[in-house]
Image (tube, rainbow, N blue to C red; front, side, top):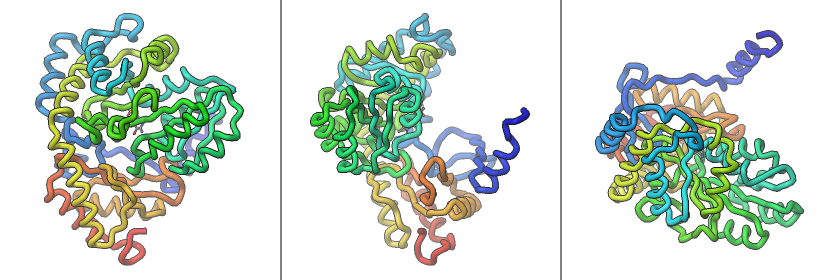
Length: 392
Ligand SMILES: *Cc1c(COP(=O)(O)O)cnc(C)c1O
């Protein structure tokens, strides 16, 4: 490929130490996994409840494959929308307490679909600076004028809302932030959205399954209805342990998405067996309160252990417990040392996070044991951090 500077770009990526390499997982997603052919303790999965390899869910998947086959064969609007998809949509609507749900093949596509269906050039989109990349890309695709307000800063958002003369305004935010683990101030967002007649959308990818009654997520936890937050989005590939995503809202919102969300219309529907597996997962998520309790107690235990060793953590009470080390070099060095000790925590570097905030994004799961966490903390302790006694 001439003129595309492909080699130069890769060289630059390497020189900046931002080159990404994939490790190869040789086992299911679980704490004691096989990575590149050797045993490894994993602390970077989004399988927060330990459902990615759950026997009930696996068996639902296998049975559904026997009944419905593998591929869905077409997009949902042609003939790829099968009975399991419809049942999962109905069950998720019931679960979230919303009128209707629409399944998407991935969370990335759900965000692209909903934002580009709602907004056009001339409209205004307000996003938290640390929103997930899919929300940022969705803003770009929609052609709306989009602004990123300072992380969690409601004063900054309000000044922007006040100035905007756009006829349609939408505020979009992560519920729990994917790289920091902290939460958005929902009550204040609802208030501002009312005051400035803006729509409000919450991407609950990291809260769905983990918090709120039965794992219903941050909106149910805070008692927010469809009137308060008209657009809810969540994914099934994280705490649910399967794949795909959905948008939940009013009848008219969902019907609009079926008509106008291009990432819904022009793509093959998710395999029906994935929908059946997600239905099984929904039962486990709702039933197994102990998983959420264990996750919470693991988070507390990990934070306490780190505090007593002077390893600084970020302000998060979620399963995401990043250790911010600052420089790209340091994040790579620490992650490599951990891997030598048999612990996998992949470093998170720009452009995934802002420059100067590279980190080890430690994530905890309900099926990590105390012994697993002790091993992680011991490994962290044995590493010589560049500034003695602290990680920053
Ligand atoms: C993971 C994630 C997505 C994307 O979901 P996929 O199903 O993995 O495409 C969207 N938003 C947030 C906040 C996420 O963490």
